[in-house]
Length: 174
Image (cartoon, rainbow, N blue to C red; front, side, top):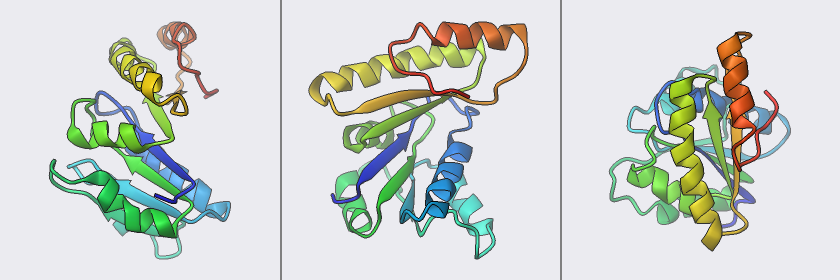
């Protein structure tokens, strides 16, 4: 593959903002002049549907790719697109056990994990962190990053954000 970067947005559960972050990241990179493809790997196809509804001049992505079926060889499916773009943003299904998520994690340069500041999201993120750290043993260049999403000004959210600092993966400022 020749895209400069493959970025996978991974979450163990729905509602983390994974699709929203995927769309915004693709749009932001597009506005900076990067050629971006959005790979919608989620069977719900939310990223593709939002991209279809966007105005024609919206900088969502130069290409939107839907991958269906668990037997898809993702590297083969992404290869022609990756040759034409600088960055592929992959919106993964909300499960670390889904074949698309596992394949995306094997292919990506960056695994971005949106985390809503809630106890259930925190618990789910522990499993994702273990998976990414395990993958980093065989792929040291894989960069895993936690992204606090929907920062709320509550005591509970503050506690969750504080606990995130104890994770081994770096935490982006929200």
